Length: 161
Image (tube, helix red, strand yellow):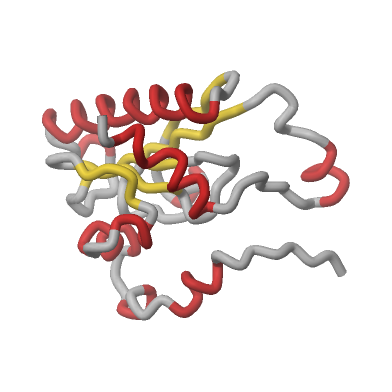
């Protein structure tokens, strides 16, 4: 049996907010400890949070505070702020981690691959040449080079500007 150590997951497993039911993103947005919740930036209508289960180092999401599940439910102001914050995410990731590219997009609905399909969110995934290596294919293991808390510490100052 392969063992993959992910010590940051214990905080999630024991989190009393998780057991309260409801939308995990709405719960996160209502908390007051942004660093603990990995919230990098709070805008007027939307916020930026690191993905707790990242595809790559620095994987973050932009989402409205409002609990909606469909793209057409966004107001013009929410839509504009989501895109502005997505641009900010790529600028900060460029400055801090210097990726070679990005995957940016939404999975709308469970059939489209949304793990949380009831709260609309945009993924920003930094990519590097060679980040798709043999480990996921042969070892069925994704190697994350940096702890989430360290990623937060590295990225957070870029959102203060």
